[in-house]
Length: 201
Ligand code: GRF
Image (cartoon, rainbow, N blue to C red; front, side, top):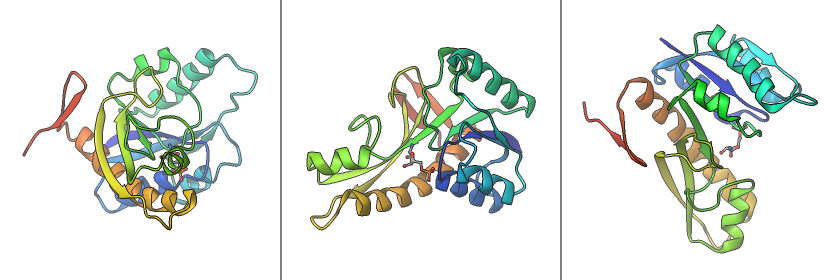
């Protein structure tokens, strides 16, 4: 089973979706370590409950590149082959991204490239789009800008608030994130420029 490292700063519901998929043998890998920059992050409790090593590192007062290299060391120490960002609220340094080329995934609560950045669900609601959704993408140096692996659409209803929309988008995130992880770990993704293609089996 290929080792996965998860970085999370908060609630950790996407981490939970990955944990549950792994338990159901549907992830194509095992979560070897969860790292958080927030000591009180519920994500760390979710990891501990699942028997996964949970590591806290405080980024405050540290230089980004130096802090990130410590994380690289922790992940490499567990033999991590894929890094999954799951609500990790920090920009990764170039050194971190280069340490795992093509091997960092993120989940984002909009149909990228629309509404990158924070509060994407509220951005979409305020803009008045009729369809939004969730995206899993490879991480590059930009903000939510890497090649798109998988998306699921979610309708925006007249009765929606940013909160109800966010809840439905989150359900889509939980469906597509484990599937994207599995495709990558099974070696089924082929990248042509910005396009990520899925090899048929
Ligand atoms: C999710 O909406 C994810 O798309 C975004 O941050 C949120 C994390 O939620 N990147 P959780 O911590 O996985 O519950």
